[in-house]
Length: 140
Image 1 (cartoon, one colour):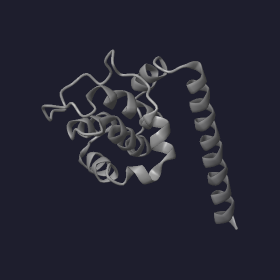
Image 2 (spheres, rainbow, N blue to C red):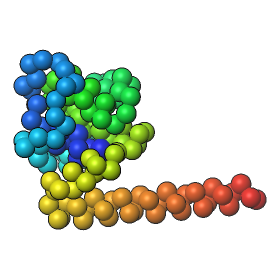
Image 3 (cartoon, rainbow, N blue to C red):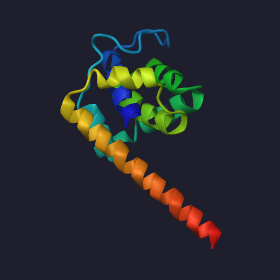
């Protein structure tokens, strides 16, 4: 979930205004704020059809979480949605650096932090239960 939120925050200042296609920009600036695109991107999959191919391209061309985000922003267009999606994919594959998680949490309201924490707890517990189930089935 941090991948989506960070992608939204990092991409928002550059949305539709990305003159030069570069990866050389500050990841988090004063204009990097949580927007409704994180929620909308996660909730409204149909609207992603145009953005998904670019997000996958950014992921495939990136070498780590930060590089995926920078690649997505460098593509231009709907940067916050694009980086939200690419950041989600990158988080699942690479993880998110602790420093970015800390910076992200510092820009979120308490309510959103509680949602993120509950989300992560739920899926961590579900993943741990799946590992236990898989271990049991291989013993039989």
